[in-house]
Length: 318
Length: 220
Ligand SMILES: Nc1ncnc2c1ncn2[C@@H]1O[C@H](COP(=O)(O)OP(=O)(O)OP(=O)(O)O)[C@@H](O)[C@H]1O
Ligand SMILES: [Mg+2]
Image (cartoon, rainbow over all chains, first blue to last red; front, side, top):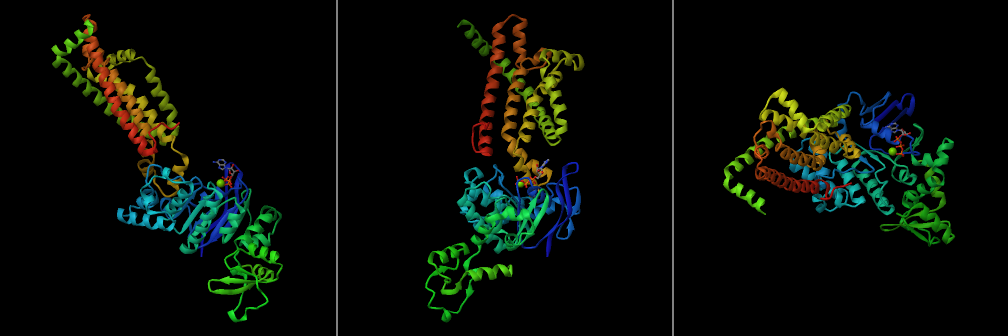
C-alpha cells in the first residue's frame, strides 16, 4: 500500500529557482527508504515537506491517500515521528517528559504516559533510571536513542529522520544503525531516512533514493542501485563504496546454498559463520585458496558458500 | 560619626513615620511592578511572535526610556496632575523597557532547532508558548524582571516630587527644609529595600537558570 506519494512536487525558495523539481514518486507502507545525495541536493527540503514544515509551490503530496493540503496539519504531525541530527531534545524536560511529549500534546493520561516512556526506553536499550535525568546528562549516542524513542511515542505510522546519526562517533553509529534496522523489522514502520553516508544508506534501506539538484536520479533496491545504475551520476556517486557496502551488509546465510546435514561434502573443510558478511566470505575464500566454504549456523553446518551463490542472489535481485 | 548618629536617632524618634513611608513605598512599587510585569510580558510575547512589530515597539520603548525622569514627571504633571496616579504612570513607562526587551530576547534566542522539533511533532502555537518557549525563556525574563523591580523601587524615591507617597517624601522634606539627616534616612531605606529585593530575585534567577539550563552560570 502506498503511504506517501509525491505528485510532481516542485519547490523554490527564490522565485523559479527550483530546489525540488517535479518530484514524482511514492513510498510503500513498511518500507525503509534511505534518501541520499550530495550536500544541498534537497534531501532535507523533501523530508520537511512530508510533515508540512516546508510548503511547496507545485504538485501535491498525499499521505495515506489524502492531500497534505486537506490534512489537519497538527493532527498529521502527531502521527509522524520526527528526528533531526541535532536531536533537539527539550533541555528543560526530563528524559521521561521528552519521550512522552507527543502523548502529552494528545492529552493522554499521566500514568499511561509514564508506562509508555518505560516501554520505549527499554525498546531503545537504555536503563530506566535515565528517565529521571535531563538531556544534558546524556552522551550523544544516548540522546539519539532518546530522540528515536520520542519519535515513536505515539506509535506513528511514519517516521522521518534527517541524518540522525550524523553527529555520533563511528562505533556508536554502527551500533545505532544495527538497532535501527532491528526496530524497523520489529515495528514495521515506514521510515524515511536522510543520510549522506553511502554505507549507511545501503545498510539500512530496503529502498534507496538518490537525488541530485532537486531531482531523483535513481530509486530502487540496493541491488538495482549498486549493480544496475541506469546513469552516469549513480555510477559515479556509489562507485566502489556502494559495492563494498553492499557486500558488507549482506550475510553469508542470506546467499549460501542450503544443504541437508547428510549431504555435506567432506572435501570442504574450511568454514565460515552464517552471520559473517559476504565480504568476509570472499576474503576467506581467497585466503584459504578454496572454491567452497561450509556455512555454520546455530546447529552446525547449514550450507555451502561459493562465488556462484553471490551471482545467483544478485541476479534474482531480491 | 555625629551625622550617622543623628540619622540613627531620627529613625528611633520617628519610627512610625518611616514605617508608614516604607509601607507606602512598597505598596506603590508593588502596584507598578505588577502592571509592568503584565504589560511588559504581554508586549514582549506579542512582538516575539510577530517579529515585524518588534523593531517599532522596541524603538518606541527605548526612546521613552531615554527621556530624563524629571522631564517626564513634568510632562505627566501637566497631563494627569500631581499625585500617585502620575507617579504610577511614570514608573510603569520606565519599567517597561527591561521587561519587554528581555522577554523578547529570551523567546527569540531559543534554539531554532528545538522550536522546529516541537512544531514538527505537532505542537500548536499556544502549546509552543506554554510548554517550550516560556519555560526556556524564564531565566532571562526573570533577569529582566529583577532589573525592572530594582529600578522601580529606586525611581519610586523620586516620585514624591510629583506628590506621590513613599520614602521620597522623607527625601523631599529633607531637601526643602535643609535637613540632610532626613534625606539620607529616606535614601538609605530606599537603597536597603532595593538591595534586599535584588538579592532575593537574584537567588530566584539562579534557581530557575539551574533548573532550565542545568547550570547557574550565564551561558554566553
Ligand atoms: N530557507 C532557505 N532559503 C533559501 N534557500 C534554501 C533554504 N533552505 C535550503 N535552501 C537551499 O535549498 C537547497 C536544498 O537544501 P537542503 O537543505 O534540502 O539540502 P540537503 O540535501 O539536505 O543538504 P545537506 O546534505 O547539506 O543537509 C540548497 O541549495 C539550499 O541552499
Ligand atoms: Mg540536510
